[in-house]
Image 1 (cartoon, rainbow, N blue to C red):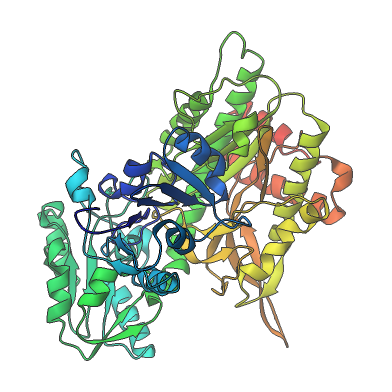
Image 2 (tube, rainbow, N blue to C red; image 1 turned 135 degrees about the horizontal axis):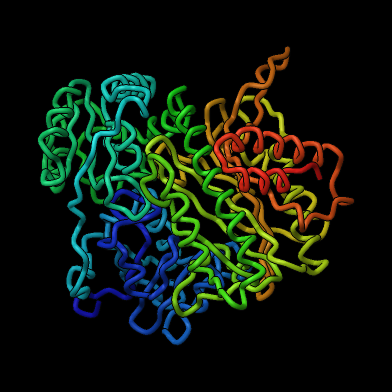
Length: 580
């Protein structure tokens, strides 16, 4: 930094594609700071260091940063300075700071430039990646093989998707686009990969014009079958590192670039007129076709069978925990083994969160050999997990009573359950925002002075990323409309530090409800099939409509899953699904 005359350097969590989860090659923020959460930004100055992250990681970040120079900055907490404000204080007017333009989005860099200008004319340099020099054993960019995603699961051919994308571009008055998001590229081309842990994507760019489509990728990843398939779908192939050249050679009048998706370096390399719009692919991908919906139902059936087998075996183990200890890692291994028995299972959809008692209060806790806690026949286990199946992706959270509970635990559990059910019961006009619905999950908590700072729900991909947008349930304003055919999770929670945490999550499908003189109305259908633990419920806190929903849900879970279970498992499920 001294040699380059830089007063600070910013390390984001992203890769050149603005991915939430990244290949090891781009985990520079984790390498420089030691914090391994999926979201965070590290800043290093010549005399200090700080890391910003959100409420999901406050407890984990405090532990991982202890003993380092990094000061934890808690996002959305009153008094926390922005990155620009902190740099302004630490570095002073006229300083120059660095970011790698290849791993920061165009919008984030433009916003940073504006914010730092207000801090006394601090300037931003974007053409340096110090990790190339200082990260001696940096992992290589993955070269894993790409595979064709069968049409029987995708439901729409790649050339038809490309035709729809071109139509979407015409509606935005754009001649072409650079697609950068890895899950968008995988969905568009009906291809899948394994470059990112738990996310079946592959490192690449896709450049679409009125006549041509070019996939920029390391060609060693493409076997002859995939090359022939791409050619048949009208897609050419060029080296991954040639994408900047491809943008300079782009011949159309204009090009659509999503400034939240395309990195700053590529954005600045474009010589044609830029249409700054959200990628049309994001919303196309979130509305599932009939084949994808059928795949979700199939994947959820398999996942539900695995969950029932796990929960039954967990219950059997609870009485013997002193003789046969079971730890949080053991819970993860047991559940993953049951999932692996199911047809079309391809792996987990994210690292399992199995948090017992106080660990359940760490929103994105992941047990390690150092933190692995043995279960006891008391208290609560928060278990958030999911599977990748060839026909769909699952995401489910259950909070499980392992024995006697405190009144506080029961009350908190019931408040979370009420919030979950109120989302499930919601009927709403088509095109509503998830922000308008989010309050239903929180209103009873707020009356008790309780809250949670993460979103209430996110979209889920079709054998793709477990987090899919732009639609969400969230307190902050997210204008993306909710329409029929979308998947979205329903996962309110309450977390009491050093005590316990509760979260209950189903994956939902948005379906038509009714049409009146006021327009089309929608509703939610639970795709997830798994009992919700009744032991912690304070029944007198539930409304009649909430009890009725829970009983009806449990009846459906039993009806759908029981034909696929043994007699012992069927008996266990019958008890678990008995009316409240």
